Length: 108
Length: 256
Figure 1 (cartoon, rainbow over the protein chains, first blue to last red):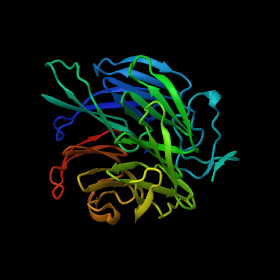
Figure 2: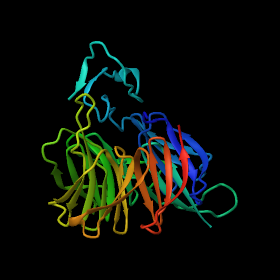
Figure 3: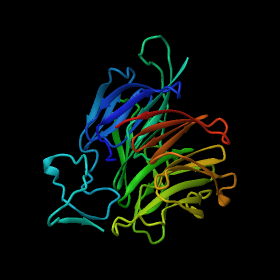
Figure 4: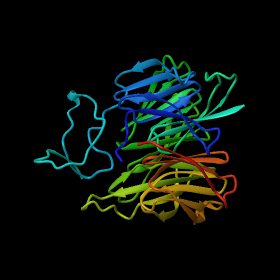
């Protein structure tokens, strides 16, 4: 399954036999996050964002720090050819297996 | 009443325990997050350590509204996973295990970089640390007609001397992923075999395979007291691990 880079699912699991889907925090191009106190820190493409999660249903973005992360311009855990990513077109959020003609980039 | 919230995404997840103070859904409490092993962010003592390919970026996050970059540590390319244990940072990269001292949390100091021997593209090395031993899984991938090289494995390092970790044991695995432990049992996701592997780590130098239980495509896991949650490629599964000889599956969440 392709990795989702869309956001954070939040579940309440005091009863692990019956997890409850609470909400979804949409963060485009997110890869990772961590929580410190009532603040969530996540990546958002090249940005770092901090989010107040003290009310999980009404989260508030506290800060956005641009130019925090370098873009991954190649598919992870892969050796072979791929279509070169052009960062001027935006942020890479997904890699898809397909047939390429004259692929210019490769990892080996 | 204690309320436990797990915040997830499909490749990284965190367990948070909150004190519920009233009947509304507003959470007021301080929460400490426990992360899965496959993550590029770790927070400790109001500092955030974020991996960025060949940099460890250190942010002062005492004020969440204004996280401040205070330091950048340059390393080789390929930083992939980070965990903080006992005031020490352990990082898995494509080629090595890094150990950093954060006695001064704003200024991590690299104590050691232990490279693996003769690898091709090493992938995704999550690390779990218990006392003087670090456990890490390594996926070695060769794209020779899509064959995944069978030298993927679990590695056990003696890290008594943080300046000089010593590899003390290895165990071949199919497609290993995230890992964690409760007491003397190490749990390791094996996506290739669709199981959670259990190892006896009473004496880590003699880490030995113990048993398995089935789970399709496990990716990462978090042990939280007597509960364990495992992320898979399609969702999450919960287990009661109070009795390690009788692990009880609980609920499952599917996310498409």
